Amino acid sequence: MAGLELNVQHLCGTKICSELRVPKSSARCPRFVRTIRASQASDGPDLSVSVNGLHLPNPFVIGSGPPGTNYTVMKRAFDEGWGAVIAKTVSLDSSKVINVTPRYARLHASNGTPKEVIGWENIELISDRPFETMLAEMRQLKQEYPDRILIASIMEEYNKDAWEEIIERVEETGVDALEINFSCPHGMPERRMGAAVGQDCQLLQEVCGWINAKASVPVWAKMTPNITDITQPARIALQEGCEGVSAINTIMSVMGINLDTLRPEPSVEGYSTPGGYSSKAVRPIALAKVMAIGQMMKKEFSGQDVSLSGIGGVETGNHAAEFILLGAHTVQVCTGVMLHGYGHVKKLCSELQAFMERHNFESIEDFRGASLEYFTTHTDLVRRQREAIQKKKAVRLGLASDKEWTGDGFVKQTETMVSN
Ligand SMILES: Cc1cc2nc3c(=O)[nH]c(=O)nc-3n(C[C@H](O)[C@H](O)[C@H](O)COP(=O)(O)O)c2cc1C
Image (cartoon, rainbow, N blue to C red; front, side):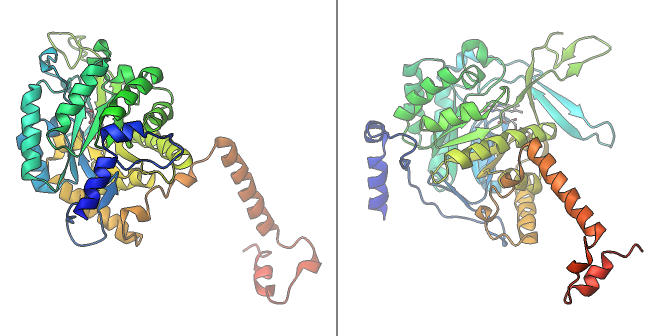
């Protein structure tokens, strides 16, 4: 078995696979086959998930950001039982990354004590820690947790050599997959990075080509919601060989203006810059984007081993169920961890299991994508409503003529014509 896995990996490794790269319509090359011991958070329906050859004990993944920023917090995530961890985004030269403080601002619900946080803006950049330090910490984690899924999040400038170098060096740590940050909305686009690539389909196509020719582990492309039609970049990423897409990154936002000082928040020396919006308030927008990608993948990539990771405002197991019902294989949580801590994963798992029990679902695949078919066009809604009204009217009107009376349905037919 081990030998077989080795062969598949070798066959689909960088060199041979890129030479043999076939159009998307043909069978997708399984680049990486990995089997790990599945551990359930608790008894109950099976939460384990298999995506792109990776096996996760549950679908809850730490989203790239502060909760995956160093060895200590990522270790904590594994110890608490998260299904996978995506580290904070790294680039080759962290000296160009200069953060400011304060860099977060919250939106509170108007009632309740303590006031509930419903929205979160950040102007945080990618990791400002030295690349070598992050590599060493990812390597150490994989040595200590060989059967857990660690995903590196990477971002580089529009430069093929830089992308090839970062992929090679990150893969050497033993990470299981790569998530490509094509979506950071602030700071990085000024350097033609992040959302600057994710918002430009031509650039995206070229960069995805470089990445997939080099990478030998699965690649997820993280999408920006700050674009009119998110299915366009998602389609390109998959066509260019990415095994998955993740959506959404944060939404471009201005949290507010302080009406005493007239200065915007978060205020750095009295000034601010638009940032990325996350937390509960973005969930409906994230669901819409995931639904659109889910429909596109179902229509254009069905039967291929491609995956979708849903992100945005997840704080309960029910929220996760909604993303899965729209086609997500995994669900990422970032701000939710900043608000509720790492132990929150146990609650997420038991809530998701309670939802599954309620519907007699035994596995995630039993309901993944099940709600997609209930989205249609507005024109179709009008048609359906008209038909339903006509049906109701027909029932209320009773029999059109006396010749319709039947012996078997006589009592029921009588009832349809009684008024009280
Ligand atoms: C403070 C902060 C920092 C983030 N940093 C990154 C990052 O480095 N790379 C990345 O891909 N996404 C980053 N994100 C985006 C999250 O991974 C996630 O896509 C987004 O916040 C929506 O999910 P949430 O509502 O669960 O936070 C960051 C989010 C926050 C709040």
